[in-house]
Image (cartoon, rainbow, N blue to C red):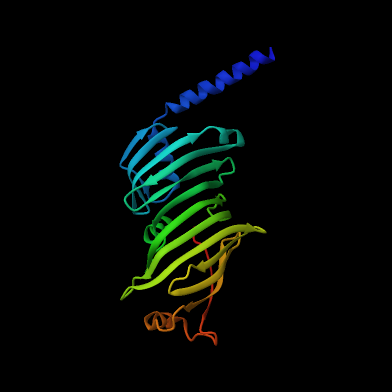
Length: 252
């Protein structure tokens, strides 16, 4: 009897999954558009479980193609999870995105590459006077229902950076490794041997406040143009480096 009951429940679950798989992809895209400001698509194909959208825009930034595939097993953990991919001539990003019953968002196995300017636009921030290519190395991010980060792991690399205001100035390559310690997200930032020396630590607290403490310097003192650009930070210390201390609150 118990065996037949198990078979019956399994069949019922399979039937429900089959019915859900027939739902059009427009239902998923409409749901995202209601929850994510500035999200829009032009062409949608497939179903809620497996599909693709063309002509996507997020906060005004274009994404040529967005694809998704539902992952079944996380459902037993109380989460709806998709494997997603975003592709256009400038951007290639993939990872898993899950939403739980607690309305918290979990992004895992995130990898990809995109210009710094495009990343800022997708996040809804004003462009910086610095260009470069951002590489994401198997990162994960946990956001609470309010949109604030609760945990993060992984590494980012910023390659080929340069100041774009006025005459372009090469800065070099940089890396940041993130982890979660005592409820705070901590990122260790350092240069990779380019014209600009940089070391520092970024701390983000659960209430969205952040602080960055570090220092910058010029690797070659003959680089007068870079020294002039850094003069906006004031006078360097006795070691020839400028101290950096920034604090603020994330806007979500």
